Amino acid sequence: MSSNLLIMNVSIQWVPPFQLQSIQLSSCILGPQFPPWLQTQKHVEWLRISNAYISDTIPDWFENVYSRINYLDISHNQICGKLPKFQESNATTHSRYLYLNSNKFEGPLTPFLSGVEELDLSDNLLSGNFPLVDDNIDITFVVLRLSNNNLTGDIPKYICKMMALRVLDLSKNKISGTLPWCMGDLDRLIVLDMTNNNLNGHIPSSLGSLQYLYSLHLRNNMFHGKIPSTLQNLASLNILDLSDNELTDIIPSWIGEMSSLQFLTLRSNKFHGYISPQLCHLSTLQVLDLSHNYISGSIPRCFANFTAMVANLNAELTEIRYPQYTEKMLNIIKGVELEYTSTLRFLTSIDVSNNHIVGEIPEELMDLIGLLSFNASKNHLNGSIPEKIGNMKALESLDLSRNKLSGSIPPSLSDMNFLSYLNLSFNNLSGRIPTGNQLQTLNDPSVYMGNNQLCGPQISKSCPSDTSSDGHHHDQHVLESEERLAFYTALGPGFLVGFLGICGILHFKKSWRYAWFQFVENTCNNLLVAVALKAAWVQRK
Image 1: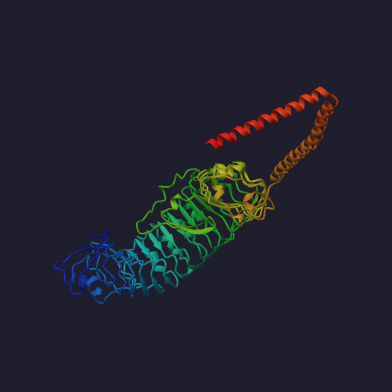
Image 2 (image 1 turned 90 degrees about the horizontal axis):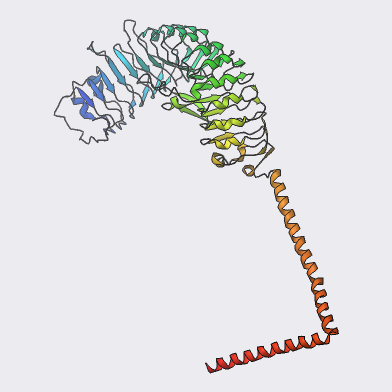
């Protein structure tokens, strides 16, 4: 009855009239107590009660009934207390799968068992060192996930004997020491995730022997030294995340020969030197993050060869390769650090910010029409913003702040339909800020601050052309007022001359004077008669 919202509303004393081998009630509401009726089921081999709203401890009877179970999934609940102890299974023909992740289990890890193919204890509150393992026990893990706990100590050497291991996720713990050299013996490994620990030392060159390795996550540790050149042998590697370490080197040119690489992030290390043009051979690359290093030189024009950033051709290639592990990566976009998981395959980004890069922004980069984010802030870029930047219509985030860019902001910037984050501050830009379309929503003045020669309504600063236009209208208004004044000034003398001319003629020509006064008298008489007739008519009514 999994994947429903059924409520198992039974009494605590209920005794089921059946004996089951398989119980699957995931996403049904069984809690908050651990269902007591399960202790009556003596032959269960398959129990799935994940996401069942249980917020209880594991009861004492659980170990007696389920310590040898083949498939157990009690993940995504709020189960607390100590981990249950499991016993070696009597069955030799079946592998065991134990999923206790996403709960609130605390305390130390229980001893690892033989015959378990997948063990997931991630997202709990477990602490302490790795358990001791008897040399006579053959550990057969294919998937081991212990991420997001509080585990400490070194990585035990016996992990190197788990020859069937394909997914090893120990991320988000407090594991210290070095990465064992013998991990290069895990020749079936697909995923190695050591993100967010306290590991130090050099990255073992033996990792170059992992021919099936698909993703390597070593972010946020204390690794130092160089990237081992043996990693160029990893022909299947799609994701390489070495960010937030203390690696010191030039960016190796041989990385450009890793033809399957789609996500490369070397952020926050001590890399220096130029960006090798060999990187441009990575036509499948979707994310390139070289930010927060000491890289100098210019941005290679051949970055336009990243054809996966023109159209996301790899969207189907980065699907989850193993059902118990979801690929994830941090990326700063729109000024915020975000973790991408299921949407990672759609991400396209270039980040070269916080370096010592000089020169102009290559015009060729404007051909990356599928790029979602471009960040080149806090460098020494000069020249102008390319006129064809509007070609990058998929761009959602653009940060060119704190450089030495000059000239005007291209009007084509207003052609971008999805741009929701823009930062052009602290450059030497000048002229009118473009308006229209998506730019109308970016009305924060801080986007343009530090560019004293910019103008426009976005920063409440009038442009010189606006002032000239206003002056023209003012002059026109003054001219019209003066013409009106001249008209009325000329009207007075004209009236006076005309009036005196008529009066002079009537004074000196007697016949005209008689005719004029006769006309005025007749007109007045006619008006008086008309008024008298109208008054008489009104009285009769």
